[in-house]
Image 1 (cartoon, helix red, strand yellow):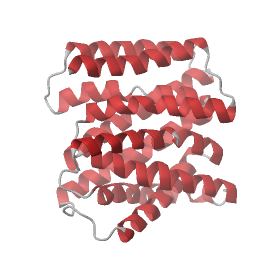
Image 2 (cartoon, rainbow, N blue to C red):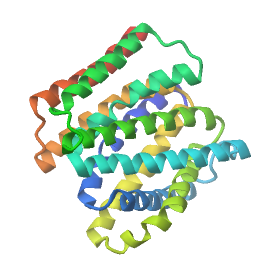
Image 3 (cartoon, rainbow, N blue to C red):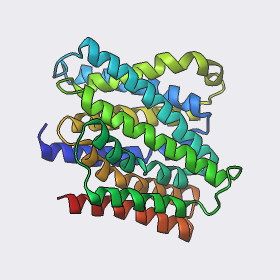
Image 4 (cartoon, one colour):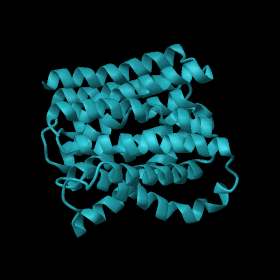
Length: 283
């Protein structure tokens, strides 16, 4: 995959990831059940994809890479649970805006873990993102749904930033479908025993939305995400993923009448514009 195709892949992945909150809310289930159902259909989709397109390209993961992929699966499953907890508590809009904080975590952690120089413009971006998060929720009260949901979403963003950096370090030379499959299998194996009592309560409609979530927003989107990180830096991917809340909020407004408040709109604009401005200044 060249850089141009990697950029196209990450843009499509951002669109599909932006629909995650929508499908999760339509499933109307506990976050743990959503994580397991999503992993189940992701595994089926990834196995089918590998069969349809022949033998996977790239090397099989080494023992060290396999260990990192399993760790990535634990991060992925926990990220899903915290994100859908945010959706359940405060709605798709706040959840996606809180999750949009992950580029700020990525910039700080990438500079620390990979010893890459963090530019002043990127520190400025982190500060503006924090200001945007302050505006997203009107009242800082831990008992309020808005604040609690935002905190769950920010935690989800931190976990996703760690996952993206782990993928950058562990997937070089590994087929992206294999990488995504190992991580989804880890979620399925580790979370199913705990979620089993919840799965029997899911309706046929819930399973349908979980299938859409697993196939489109996980199997396809995660493969595109992992594949792109083999070519472009995690911080470059983070900039493109700034569009994810735009997609999520637009669909939530259309489907669930979750109209953004003026403060939420202003905070969201700050978060997204800060990330794009940081990318332009970096260039």
